[in-house]
Length: 372
Image (cartoon, rainbow, N blue to C red; front, side, top):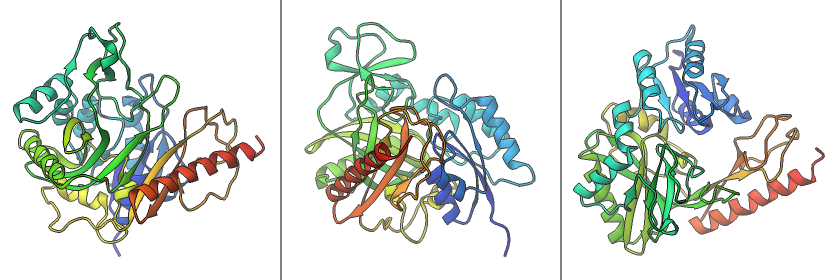
């Protein structure tokens, strides 16, 4: 049997991509910030990087890590997940050396430019909150977002003082939902829709908490959102896995943003059998979309568990099977940093969310009861 083709993966957390790639028959060569137990188990080789001052990938360190991982191997390309939304220049440097399996730098720059994206939505008759590059007169009606930010930690309550690298978005009503979209440059399919929630922390009121699928969406709204996605694709040649975030208010919605990379919802949409999301991503980047809908099985949810106090040394545990992103025993985790991810399946999305909420509480209670 021939050796599995190797593939480079870089993301803030590479675990979900690595597991999906391994299931698809690839040998994942992973660079991320955590080096968790399950990431190391799935990866053929791994390099852990520290975030730079902007909480992103340091360009020089990442390129050096890729070269080290590729030594003696012949990677078929590089897949970049969360952490590159504001780094099209780094994506361009990666593409000079490796085949970039995902959106090219110019596409990422286009969709993460708040002014250009708002203008595109207006031209394509897609409801989108008003944006401003200068402080608004009534800050309470606005939020501030870092250009190219991800994960919700960059979103805050608007203030009157301007901050470099940030823009303002008008508050609109609705519940946050996200569509997982697979595109081939000129067409797209919506693989599924999830509801999402925040896990507020001091100074981070919109920090990402988790997601559950399927979201409850009225048929008329679902059709309208699919239409909005198709109108975007007709002007922005997205490829591979992407997520499109909405605020849904009954049958009305506003499209908030496009995340032009595999999203944080990979866990809840990964099919239990058949083609993996990584396999679909690679195929879509080569122009091929699936002929049949994605079969995800039961409703599912995932939630990030954030440490509620400083952890000088993570205990040596037998982690439950429903816990992912399991930190290495003895590692240090600061308060309000990610500790792990908890997963659940159930008959409904609401039930799955209730289970992950309970599992998150049980992890934190067990941690508090463990000797430091």
